[in-house]
Image 1 (cartoon, rainbow over the protein chains, first blue to last red):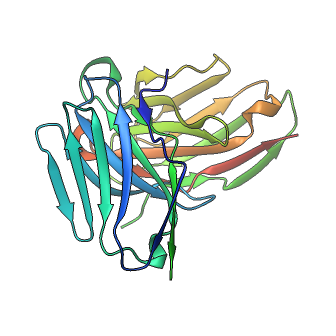
Image 2 (image 1 turned 60 degrees about the vertical axis):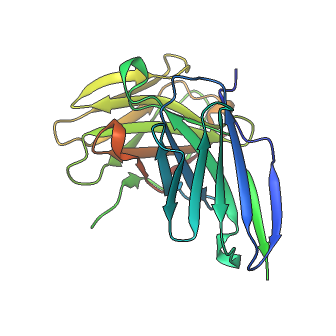
Length: 115
Length: 112
């Protein structure tokens, strides 16, 4: 039972354009969502997060949108740069109760930004 | 500021052996979580410790265990290694559940 899904295994965009990575979730109890970037043989690097009380959070070139009714979040990268090429994971966390401290990850989307 | 440190970076073990991996969290972080990454299963939660207590455990067999010390450093142990245990094991630390998690670079375990 995959509670967090990233349906696009890969995405290719041109440098300078917008990259949009999508993530769907099924558990309505999730109330905190995070995006991580990962290179092979390294640990994930935190990019940006959003609480369920918000629908948008921005940090520089990165913006995360949350649509709770659709149980969908997306990460926008504008403008995309070749250094953004990596695997991107979305993760969900229910900070309270029995799921404290547990992140549930999607399967990842490989982003390639072409010069 | 030091990040999350995992040792060793690479490890090769034989089936049936046991292994201990170590994680030193960011100073002040009391929550430490462990994850397993494999090509087929992605990133999967193993367990989380907070102030030396295991608060949550993922769906892994009892061969996987862990502990946390009073200085928040954590170890995980895998006994009776199987070929399928070959993976990248990642540790993450945090101030607490609402503050996000910082990951270490991981330990690449190969079981032969």
